[in-house]
Image (cartoon, rainbow, N blue to C red; front, top):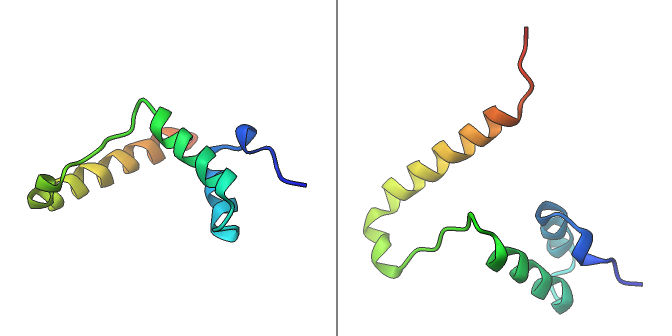
Length: 74
C-alpha cells in the first residue's frame, strides 16, 4: 500500500523520496509542492555570476528562519 503523499510535509516527502527514488507518484507530488510554493525562488543561467551573493542571501534567510522557530530562553 502506497502512502498518501498529499498529506506529507515537504520534509517528509523528501525523506520518503530519498528512500524510494523511483516512485514517480511521489516525485510528481513533490514537484507540485515545489511549483505551488509562493516563496520559491527561481534562478536563470545568468545568475551563476552572482552565485556567492545568492548563496549568502540563502544562508542568511535560513539562519533567520531557524532563529525565529526556536523558543526563547529566559
